[in-house]
Image (cartoon, rainbow, N blue to C red):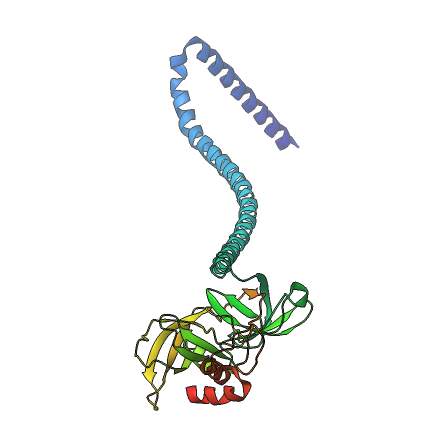
Length: 319
C-alpha cells in the first residue's frame, strides 16, 4: 500500500516537472526565439520523418481510392465503347450489303437500258437446288406479274436462262449452265450459227460448251462475242451469252467446237430481270397469209439446236 502511494507521488512530481519545463519553454520562446532554436531543430529532426510517413500513407490511401474510382469509370466507359463498336460494326456490315445491292441494281438498270426494246420485270432469287451453282432456281414473281413459261431471264450483263414453270407469285428458272440446256446462238461479228450446251462440270472451270459452229471462212476468233440467235425457237435474238475462250476444228472438218466464258456469275445470282415477251417462232412448214416463212436452212438448224429429241445427242457430241 505504501509502495503504491510512493509511485503516485513520483508520477505527480514528474508531471509537475514536465509542466514547469513546458511553461518555461513557452516563456523563453516568447522572450528569445534563438534560445529555442536547438529544440526546434531536434523536434524537427524527429517529427519530420514521421510527418512524411503519415503524409505518404495518406497519399497512398487517397491514390488507392482514386484508382478504384478510375477503374470503375473505365469499366463503364469500356462497356459503352464496346456497345458502340458493336453498333458501328453492324452498321458497317449493313452499309457494305447496301453498297453491294446498289451495285447489282445498277447493273440491272444498265442491262434494262441495254435491252430497252423489251418490257421487263425485276425479281429476287428466293430458292435454288442444292450445290454451288444456280442451275435451277425460284424467283419471287409469277403469273400475277405477267410471267409465263419460256420467257427469257437476264442478269449480270447477259442471258441467265428461261422460265420453265410459274405460279401466282413465283416462277422456276432453268439457267443455261444446266446439263439439259441448249441455246441456239451465233457469233455477233459474223452471224455464224452455233449451239451453247450447258455442262455443270465445265462451269466449275468457268466455261460452257460451244458446239457445231459453222465457220467456213475461218473468221471466228477467240474473244468474239456470242449472242442468242435470231433462229432460236425460245430465246429472243441478240442477248449476250459470253465470249469465246477456246476454239478448234471438229473431226468432220465442217464445224468447230470450243468453249465460251459466260458473262453471268452463276454462283452469286440474287436479282434478275424477266423479259415479258415470248419469242414468236414460226415453223418452216406453216403457211399463213401475209406471213413470211422462215428460211428452211434456218429452221433446220433451229430444230437441231433446241428440239428435245436432239438435246442429248448434241450434249454427247460436245463431250
